[in-house]
Amino acid sequence: MAVDRTTSQVLFDNGTHKCISFTSLVKGEGVQANQFLIIDHGRAAVLDPGGDLTYIPLTMELNKYTKLQNLDYVMASHQDPDIITSMPRWLVYTSAKVASSKLWARFLPHLSSSFMSERMMGNWEERLIEIPDSGQSISLGESKIIAVPAHFLHSVGNFQFYDPVSKILFSGDMGASIVSDVNQPLENFVDHIPYMKSFHQRYMCSNRVIRLWVNMVRNMDIDMIVPQHGKPFVGKNMVNQFLDWIENLQCGIDLMDEYTFTCPK
Image 1: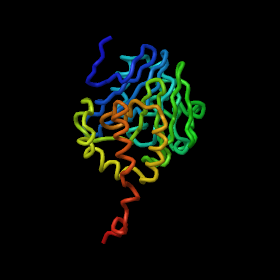
Image 2: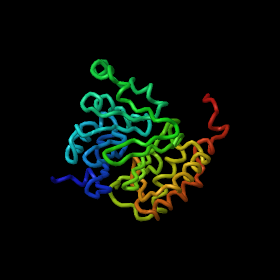
Image 3: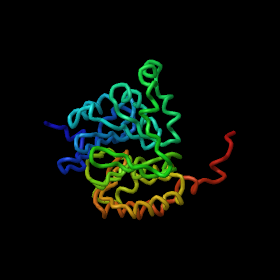
Image 4: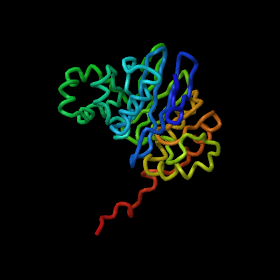
C-alpha cells in the first residue's frame, strides 16, 4: 500500500508494532500540529487528534495504516482545541474510548453538539477513561501505553504518553517548536533553540516543575521525544541535549513581576 510520506512519517516499525506521525494536516491559519497513531498487533490508538481542521484528513491518513474499527482509544494529553475538539466525531463514528485527565473529563461533554449528544451521551461514561493524577498504564493489543504525569507543562491536568516498545515519549507541548520545515530531521540542537525558547518561556509554568519532570524522564528508557508541534528529538544524545537545556530554563511564573500585573489605563 502506497503511503504519502510528506504527510506521514513512520517513527517505529518492528512488524507487529508501529508508531506513525502526521505532521502536515493543518491547513490555512491554524498552528502546525502533529497527530500520532500507535498500532500493536492490529489494535490502534490515536494521540492528540486535534479538531475539525484535522478530523477528515486524519481519518483518511489512518485508513492507509489501519481500519477505524480497529481503533481502541483516542488519547488526549490535555484539553486544548488543537488536541481534542474533534472528540464528538470519534465517539459517533468509531467505538473508541477517550482517555483524558480526570480534571478535564467533566468538561469534555461541552464539546458535543446536541445532535451528537443524543447519539453518544447515553454511554458516555462507559467510553471515558479518567486518568488519575499519578498516571496510568493502558493496554493496547499485546502492549501498553503509559500515561505519564506532566502537570502544569502547560495544562494543570496534563499527560504525556510513553510507548515502552518503541521507547518514544509523546510529549505534548514539551519540546514543541515553531518551524516551517517540520519534516526535516533535527541535526543541530543549538541552532534549534530559538524556535523553542519563547514558546516554553510562556507556556511552561515554572522551572521547578520542569526540573521535577526532567528528573522523572532521566530515569526512563527513552530513544525519542516527539512533541505535538515541530520536530522530534531522535536518539539519546539529542534527547539528553534537550533535557539539559530545558532543565535550566526560567519560564512562566519565574518571569512574572509587578509590571506584568499593571492595570491598563
